[in-house]
Amino acid sequence: MGITVNYYLDTNDFQTATAVYTDNALTVLAPDGWYSYSNRWRKQTSGVLGSVGVCPSCNQGCAANPFVSPGSYFLGQMAEGPGVYNLTIDTGNAAGISRMFLGQNNNDCYGIQIIHNSTVVNDWITGEGYQSPGNNNAIWMGDTSIAAGTSVTNQPSFTWNGTSWTQSPTTVGYTVNSTTNFTTTQDPFNLAVFSKTTAVSTTVQITVLIPPTSVSGVSTNILFSPVCSALLIATPYNATSYPNPADACNATGTTDSVFIANATSGNISTDIIPVKYSYAFTNTFGTTAVGVGYYKTSQGYMQVDSNGVVIDVGSCPP
Image 1 (cartoon, rainbow, N blue to C red):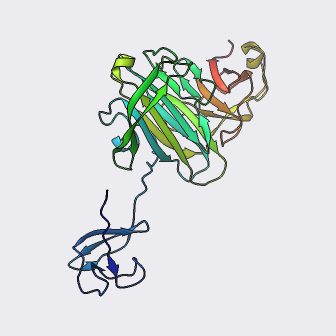
Image 2: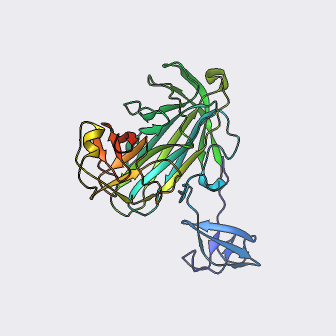
Image 3: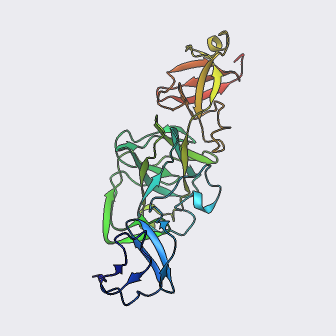
């Protein structure tokens, strides 16, 4: 049980007070040190409160590009063990798509679930193309497998507090859902995206399930990097859908705009060319997918599946 200590200010507002006291008569100064109230902090030195600062959020900020520094990725910059890891990420203030990157697996196995605006986001592009469990369960990733229905019990639970993982005093359990591991070999990234059409700050909740080695047989190390929201950049194509690449290549002109999100480099300003296993959208926000079919592009042609994912590209004539 914690201990409650009363402190007193010489004004009715922490931000305008000049000192902190230990008695209501304001005769005994509180020890020098850091004090906070209502998301504001101040340091008392020689009995005088210093300037006001805003307490940092416990949410993790997003990065401009993935994996550029230790602060831009998680679950991999330290030696996390088996358990359930929960963190909340700020997606930034811009409209457009937010991209969640997972590094290439190397003898790993884990489940991951993303929730944005109360909606589960568990559709990913991997080295095998579009992958989804088709429900609200976590998607299981890795290059080793766990039998569907496997029950994992008594696992430690951790929450990111802005600087480190804090362990809960209670343990949790989970069951591996029926759609299990995909071999994610794409080099270098795996990618999930979600969109927002207005320039507002939103958060996304991430849960990562790392099973014990007694279940998975491997010691999992995950590189997870959240990238801030941004508008997609247009690249020219012909918006008419064709049943085969030959007809697409014979189309006249590429005066329409397609908006590509891929995981080639993680740079939204350069990852604009349709490549195999990239998302294709009809608008800059990434809210509407390109329909099924073959399309002429400025590089040749691309084939898009029912998930709005480019599954083939080629030169013209095919």
